[in-house]
Length: 195
Image (cartoon, rainbow, N blue to C red):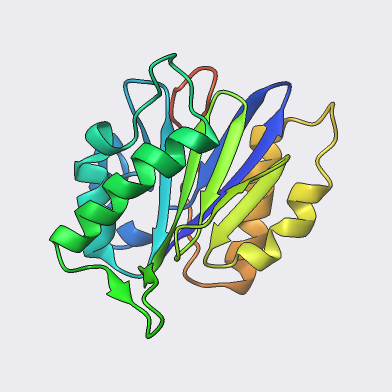
């Protein structure tokens, strides 16, 4: 499943993820296509936390088509509801990865974290959209990172604090492993931190 953490500072979202899916191969960690968070050409960064690897791979494969901006070049809640979520549901349904509850609600075994400029959206298993304030964590060991993320101060090095938070999680959850990958919505550049 993996871990994704993020914190917003000065209208920039800083994002970190572990590389637990690459335990056996250091070569896989060096390939950006294998990172748990994907930067798209339009500036959106998408993170997927799921127990279904096939669903993750499909959504990443079609991410440029699914995770779009509106006609004004923005990412809004309305655009998520009217455009992105229906595309996610269609992709999962077409590949028989969508489940339906007895009451007719559709769901999948994952959570989407969508970052754009100063925005953080979390999309739940039942496709409910949450606008996140200053920080978010999801996936393996997330409960061990929340306290550290909530204590980040204005003058702190956010990337270092994200690495510290993921390191705390790795002490208590063996699925969370370095190296950690960092990216932010301003530079859109990946960095690896080894602990």
